[in-house]
Length: 70
Image 1 (cartoon, rainbow, N blue to C red):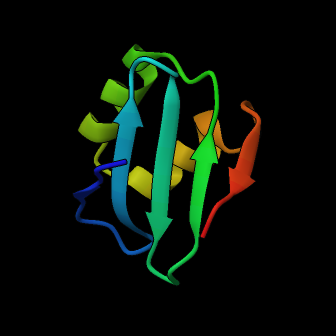
Image 2 (cartoon, helix red, strand yellow):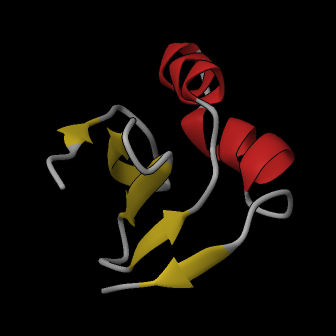
């Protein structure tokens, strides 16, 4: 999945696959997680959020199934 770099102290890059509704997040520590069944609108809100880390923690991390992939 192609990820775009983001300006964040915790998140290095974010990608999204609309066909599978999968959000992929690379953290600055190098870990990569995929979050499943994430609506495209929520991804767009994440990308527009002033704090990617806070948005991820508040709306995605505990609300969607995920898997560490890297």
